[in-house]
Length: 429
Image (cartoon, rainbow, N blue to C red; front, side):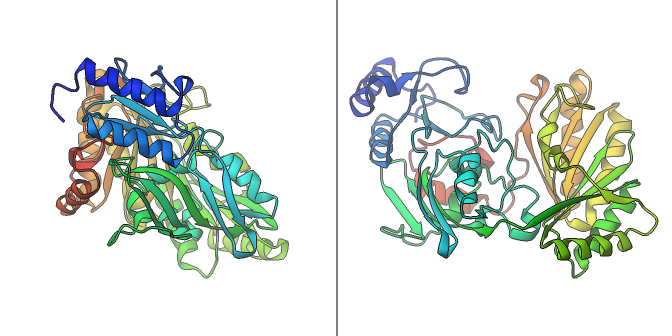
């Protein structure tokens, strides 16, 4: 793609051809939710054949296409270098096959997580993820952003749960891998490759997942408040014990004591026994029944109307060793003092967490740099998910590490002309 972008003639010809493929009602001007303003179209294909056709048209004209599901995570990652078309998966929304006796489901990428879970619940099954904004987040979107939530502690992440995927590559090739295989792309584990790739390798059109039964009973136990070190130590003791909580998260905030939430699932008797054992692990620190809305703490970091919310924050995802959770609290305390910052954090017991942080004016850019440096010094990583206006130009990803040449080679193999979400991923991929 040339730096100057396509000509108006190329864009007009692309739009005309797309209207022939999709119909005029499904090829229209981009709106406010479809990334940057300017020339370009929103494409709304009905099936994989139409997805393949419009991508083929885009590649032939060196146009840039950004896939979009529910639009809940379009601000994550770097802004694409160019957006000539946004490809919506809204009409690819069907649950294609629920093999309930085999505990698997095949679903189109545009199906919302809430609708999928409602369908699975009819047979008392679920996809064991607790993603952000399930009402609007789509299956393809959560795979692209690799958002699985606190249930990852017990059930693993999306790369552990997805067993098959169909992806349309930039040149229109329909690639299938894993469960229900028809055609493979030799040498690639497509489901795991596209999970977390932010739409830079292909457009996910359907996926097959392994499922888990719905538990007979669920109970939330809240521990604290206490110091961050004490709460982190209790979380570590729970992880090291024979207990099997489904989720453990630690909530931290400026000027407040730390608390931990523990999700117990199973039979009534089993949940009661686990609650007693966890209370014993807490010693003198209070452990009591907690509200189920504690598990929406991640979403409330974005909700500026929520109680205790931070207005116009930067929101970052950190990944550290579980043993470094209390150190993260110390790092945030230092950041608070040096930059007069306010912050809130929700960190899972396995070391993945979200932090909302705010500082006045020009302080936010050096604050983010200092926070990233401190986390990386511990061997962790920091990805910026939301930037306030003052930090628009800050790279989302940080140091790419030794894997960057391999990632670039994969991108060159699957999307050699840089059609899909150019520049959005690590290292400008």
